[in-house]
Length: 126
Image (tube, rainbow, N blue to C red; front, side):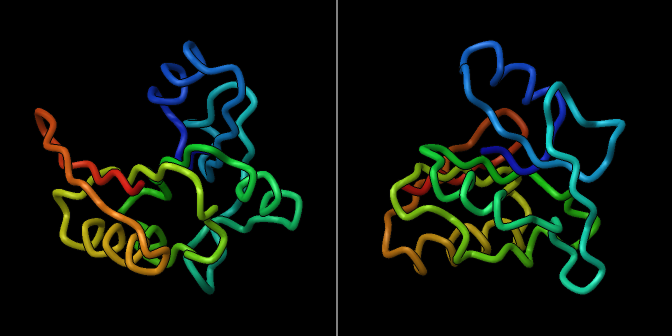
């Protein structure tokens, strides 16, 4: 499961046969991405009960949306994340994303590792 769609979605789908991506902007949606509006109250995707089942069944979750400028990324409803999935949080070079990654790890009682890329810092929660 990927929150936020774009060029990374194409890469994921080239090596994985089952990628569900959530996106709010039709221009960024790739392939069979689930378009979901941003809930104005929470700033997070308006996900359905069916979406929650898909998310709970994921083995890997990538959090790269909604875009940081919406502010909604930081309102992620942590309880929807599966307890046994590996979770990647992109953009942890930004303090709010790093804080969110730590909050997810703490909520789930799991270990977190930060990996520095060329331009970004990514959190891996396992």
